[in-house]
Image (tube, rainbow over all chains, first blue to last red; front, side, top):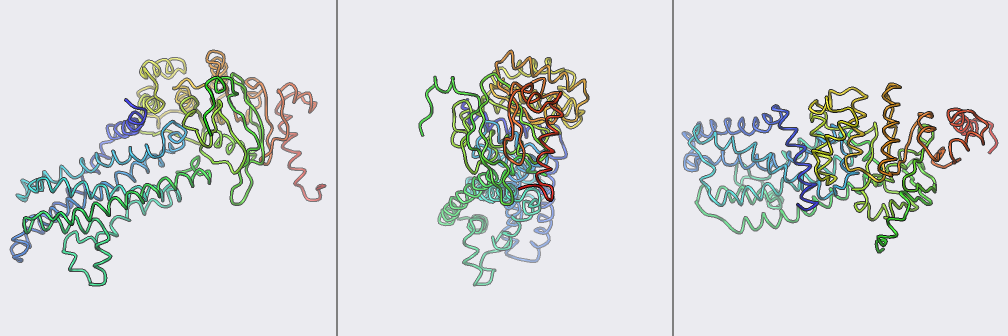
Length: 265
Length: 261
């Protein structure tokens, strides 16, 4: 095993040990996605009788809430792993070990894949018997939607980890709340055309808007719109590059300011 | 800059510091210090609160970026190539903690993997035996007493059998018996592994017992240096405690209103 793989694996092992010894943390991963699916599932059943569009596009809200949670869990997966190190005042131990900052970031990303799977898959499975809807019916496009949202979640997560390094636990509330700021502009539950005209160009700057429009096209029209996926991919690449730059810049800044020894206090 | 040759790297001191300086926005924490720690030696870093000891250790570990000067650790430039030497060094500080919900064994396994320790299970078993941690291996780190935590921190610091050990207050908040036991263990480790140790401490008995040489720091500068015996003789004192007080009070008097500039 290469040194990098071993060190990334060590950080993952640390979190595996944490989850193994704390069922509340595992429960917390699953709790919100399941709750969201139940609310939107019942809402869909109610609206299906009132709206022909909802009746025609059965499961569009459940699909949206599940994919939205991929983004949320992806971002939380990174920032929560970072916060765990800060809460336990363990960052200095990690940064004086042979672990490189970018390896730490890769470990956080790998953990966020696990967290999103642990959080979203049970909720998706629950929707099958409860509402007769399977998001897995989307087939391969689901993989594209999932991956694009996860990568955007990483980009936001990296930037927020940078913020945590810069401002310490004073910035903790931003780690929880920031991603939700994107929801109204991402067209998660409604087409982007619903937004005011002046806001729509800004909404199209978000990879999430492309993904959720693509999801509705797949579910309502049964078409896979490549151009939307390519747009999301291009935006994702730009965002993840910016996320890495912010995170690595924050590590360098923390070394200049000497704050790594006291981060978390 | 090209890395040094293997021979140079092997023969170079454990630590070589010249003109080291760290200025923060509102204060100069370290102001142009020079020192050398030879392989296998123990160097004490003494000074009151705010003297610059922790910042110096932070710079030696690569946690804090110097404003000026040079640090070479086992021949490598610490600012540019710290990842070349980090696997061969380690540190322990009471200001840094461990994941409280992980057991002692789990914590040590994680750090063994980070440092690339082969046969980690055997190494952890040996450390647990040496440091009297066997009974606590499967206990959560957060439930350990101060003494047990210090021994665990020492086990983490020794997990990769470092050639250079940086210890910040290794016996702080320990009872005299445990403190004495840890000092004996460090002496034995140094002899066995030929490791160099840099020790920042407020415990003067510890410094006298362990250190070959002592640097006295005040306001970011090295104001005196020498063996404990030489310092005692120079200050005309019977203990390092008194030497420490003389140095600290000299600084306070110099800052007092009406003192000569």
